[in-house]
Image (cartoon, rainbow, N blue to C red; front, side, top):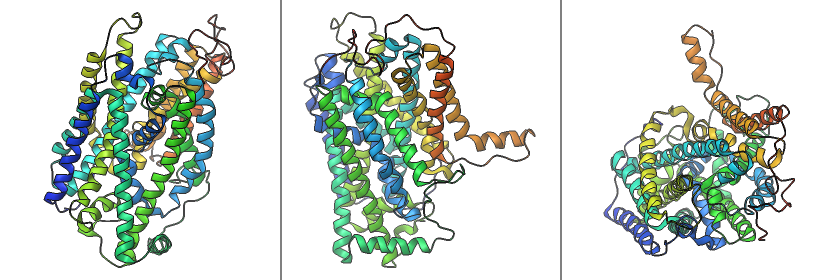
Length: 536
């Protein structure tokens, strides 16, 4: 994603020291945790004995990422607090669906790779399709995370973009490769603690130096929004798909994302598989949800604090950053210019932590899925695949680092929020839809599921790139005017609706399968199958 920022001062020796200590520390932790990786289950699933609280923190760490850490405080400059309302509205719905449907359904299986379910439900081609979609999703997602965090760190630190990307990718790959999922989960816990500490320190600092707190910050934010020409609060809802965002469409978008991520994304489901049973997995999910709400509110408050610090006190933003095109840089730039030496480095370490907490999850899940595919058909427990998993982790890290460079060519006008559903999240709904078809459409067979998912993917791509496609046809003389850019909030819900609807229609024309569905669908979940367990 092409971005151009104004020059920013480099780091002090204290800031550099904090970054070096952090990077060295997570590698040492990974090496220490590598002592317990004898079996495949230990390496890929933490022995299925990981504490539910740590798993919950790890889930939100991997899903939050540096994209949220950068965009949430910056978004306050553009829309105040109104952008958070859609996320809050989605929370009760997504929690109910995931808590009562997704987690208890999948935890009845003793899978290592969640895509094993697709083979038992539909057949191996569906499993292969799910795996390929996931690999594309996670490489794009992690590449995007590396690029976004590396651009910011390179800009504010003075390091080259190449140095930052390689450093982030190598460190996350090393501790994940040697320590497996156990290292991923425990480093995620430390990284979330660092992120919380950084935001809390910023809030306390602004309180101390200005003598103000949240009500004053909110009032300053409202005054700032009044200075933006043409600004209007995020509307409740609009049928116009070109409206950038509404509270309802953001809520639907977030609900679809969370449901699909918690049923079809190995990065998330693997965490729950690492717990002892469904009860522990549910506790992990509730922990992740509560931490997610708290972290988003902390980042929102940080954005409000920075609006007051600069706008409320009529202080020019450091390094002349623009609140229109460079707002995502304001938080880390403030940390380096205004916070005590070393603390700014801690904020940048929190940024790296947010990035690495997603990257380690991505490369570990890639290694897990691919290793499971390679050993498919082998007798259980005969051979250890830990060494294979370590090499695959290394390869995944290299692929993700390369993807970061390729994503640098995304259009800058989309921004972080607008680019996500047009890259990796274009795959989220079709992938999650495969699992939802398996759960809730008993009549649907392999053909219906795969055709539905393919149509959903085509929908995502068509809606996300409607404007560039239209410009191409205009230049070719096939259209007289390019279509407008559709709101990102319509892409994922539309793709899931198409996936499910097409699968249902195709299933009406399929011959009923002779295959037993005992335990494999929601309606047959109480029937004891060969794959299901009765653990609570």
